[in-house]
Length: 573
Ligand code: ATP
Ligand code: MG
Image (cartoon, rainbow, N blue to C red; front, top):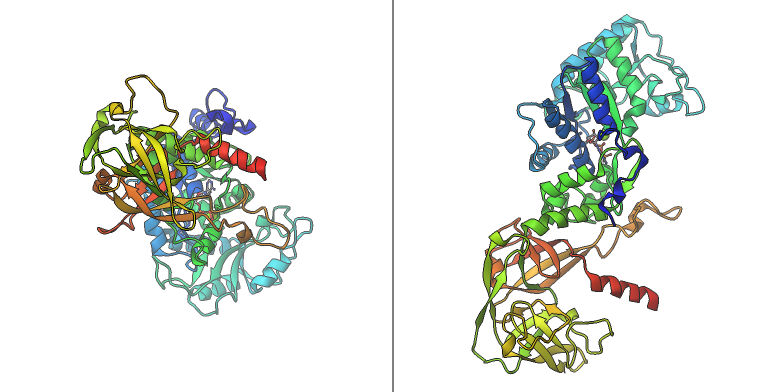
């Protein structure tokens, strides 16, 4: 796979090295439409941020950096039924962790509630908005469809005086929730459904995380978003494609109110294979217990990726590689994994850990001897130095590094075969010990004392090098291995009548509780990232206690044998 294979989308072809967003901004600066660049990242605090949001964050903060402008963090907090302080705090933490700084420019749509209310009054006074008594169901029924025009509300022609009176009384709390709305008076026959007298305000008695119980009417997202951008002097209001059809409405509000107009630019949202990205579904995964929380390492949330061991650098690099496009597409999750492997390859020190231990007794090794073997911490970065790894008569190797009746392409340990123990000696298997059920419980081996360090003076070669730990020096730890949360590349691909949940992978988490780790690893702290030789990249999970360390596997290494084996398995089926 070439790294560019993800970027061959026609729309991604850059002109003069610039994507379409850069081109638009360049032109706007050249023509003098704007004199600088002000962007914003506008999350609704109704869930945790995910990798799709990271794309938007990198884009908006990245543009601000490049053009020496600024990027605001603005919470679009217009729906108190779904928004919570927990989400506000998590969003702040995640954006900061990704490496971006909004300085003093943290804003909230709720800061503008009074102004938005004033503008609603202005629109009523201009005859451009009216109070409607249709129920939400009726509003929907009157709205029409893509092929049929809508029907005008019987309340559409109320007098300005009556509208002003009713709207003020809506604010004062005189009417029950859902009984009335304020609607823009635009065009019930518009081909764009968003223009068919959209609701501007609804009555909701819910405590808002910031304004508390001050309001019982709340602006719709569509009546808040464009004006919030305008108030903040945003020049380029960058959003995902589904807002393209809302743009005429935002433009209409801005024009009728008569305020400064930002330019909206739409780009394709990020979709990833084996991943659901909608906050609604992510919330269901959490609430229904499919995962352990928003920061479960299987979740595509920023907090999940962080806990999994992803670095901010790897996520930023991923966002850079995918670029921006104007057409929807789905990125292979392998690209994200590639980015973290590349980053950790440079940064993570190597250690030895045995995930599924098999005991090996080296019969000709002295009973009480311990030798300190010199091991390289990071072959990619010699400044990381070396460490000592204790070696003794009884060691553990991986169960799957041994086969009693090996396939011809299996080069690891087998009866009569010789392999290298990393940083130690050549060993040869002399005997296999089984329990009464025929399970292999122990191997007997001999070692060649002349191969210390891993090379034979007579030049003889072995085909495999195994990792190992010394039984009496190792400590026990829990290691959590992860697979994709979904069985299919497209989680929504389900037979008729079944639910997306039927694609949830029941085996996405595997907990290994009897792993044996080299002693040096005890010194690690929560969040530290390492490579376990031949097993992948791992990080220390916050569930770690003084009694028990817990590791997450961030990502596997490229494993050639696993590839061969899976091919053999499919052929033999
Ligand atoms: P979701 O659809 O996942 O529930 P959302 O769009 O409702 O997300 P917001 O909090 O409104 O979530 O999003 C904040 C910003 O992030 C918006 O500008 C939105 O366009 C952008 N964004 C959300 N999802 C993606 C995605 N998958 N790819 C790129 N940008 C995204
Ligand atoms: Mg949204």
